[in-house]
Image 1 (tube, one colour):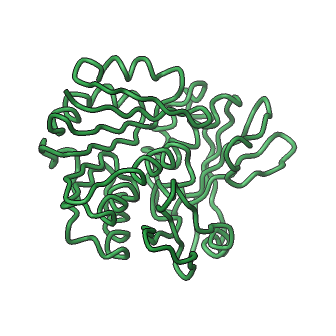
Image 2: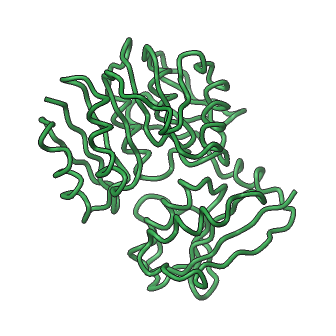
Length: 293
């Protein structure tokens, strides 16, 4: 089996955005390197290396859409010329085993866990366990934006509620809502591989029967109790009529994928229809939570 690797050099302050874009495009693994070739495999919170220039490398399956990934990387400031993006073939290595050795159970809030296959967590009566292996699509819970959304979900009573997960990636947020008792969930993504990963993860967690899997073209506005959207600020602003239109009065909207300096623009797009707005920061990222009027 073989893979392909894309490599870009970005300024230190653009590292988080570059990682976010690669993860949203389905990267199986991401490595950060400085000019001295000192790798850091998925650094923990607050430990992003302080190198002036960071080489960000994303590992993809061999048949990944290179043009789509290249186009997405244009969102990162400074990556505006194709020659700055390098691709190479990666030989057969046991990447999955390496990642499984590193990927451990993770806890979000008080009771919500992501647990890899074959691993166990201490028994607690109110725990919710999402069974998820890395490498299927964006969203293993390690990115700050995903963690912020999971922590919010952990504190909510979603039993019997209707939930939309727009830009679902691996489906982790929608699956978490389903496991916590949601009546039905709609998972929306424009990437067919993401929807396949969401279906596989939903089946693994035995909640596929209450989740609808849709592309944006198939999605129709629905009176949801909760709308979750962990995507970039530009699409969040553009999609504000769709997302707000899918939320019933009094329902909650949860937005993430927003950098600090973008929060005001996103807030402006939603504030006219929202009350009880709260912002939560994690590293360079913001989660915005509000209730529809």
